[in-house]
Length: 358
Image 1 (cartoon, rainbow, N blue to C red):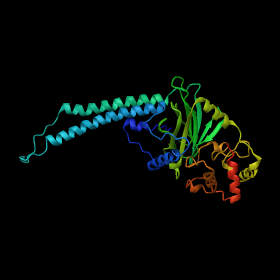
Image 2 (image 1 turned 90 degrees about the vertical axis):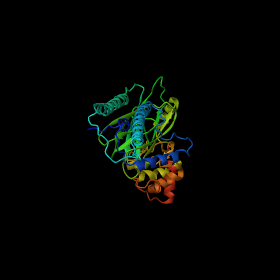
Image 3 (image 1 turned 30 degrees about the vertical axis):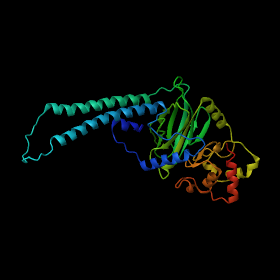
Image 4 (image 1 turned 90 degrees about the horizontal axis):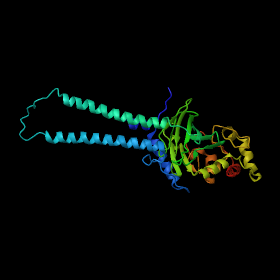
């Protein structure tokens, strides 16, 4: 059975869902915020109470609706409890005898049977309506299509109709409500269970090995939105971060044009390229225009166009890039990238070559 779960349903239906790695999720969000706010462009923090996309807006409103109903029920029960405690508290002249017992009140039994059924029925209808509007949304011809593949512990994004492959930073056009241009995302997993979640844009949707799930977003505000893998997937689950760059249509088109170009070759850094192509790097990474065509690691063709490395675990600076190559565990303990064990001279040459990939 295909487990296609938009986890916010659990909140709507009043069922406590099991979210593995909650501590890691919180830690990941804190890490994302700490990394992002120091950068050149401050991303929007992961806040599901500030929806900026149609699916997130629908989830937010149904959540508020459920919260209000739950609050009313809590207030009524709490008031009745206080009333009973005050009204029927033991008085000073109580002789200790049991008061008369009342049985078989049809009115009371009908009330505590019918009212909960009505509440559950109303919540069910409201929830079903929201789930239907999100899951069965029509895909317009102008929609952007993306394939998101979850890896341990990074994100691969492919734009099949645009010929673009990137990692960890998803670029999409802003959607004008008058002329929506949503982004439909096909979710796949390369290894274990993952979960795609950008709180301000959409609910959680799982990535299951050998299964295909789908989600969509149509952001209404330009900006950078922080997301996270919300399903425990291994040691570095907490640092499997992602960013969604929502850009004006013209800027998005320019980004696509730049990402579609092959890697720029410079003779000045031929030594670094020789080192890269002679090592195991080419088995995991791809760089267009070179012999490197690996699929196990991120595509590096336009590595330096990204603001972060290691799936958001560090800013993309020459110092961090050099450290990442030399000792990945220093940035992301438990990552599947091996340490290259290069000499300082070779490490400098390789880092200089990678810095030219824009």
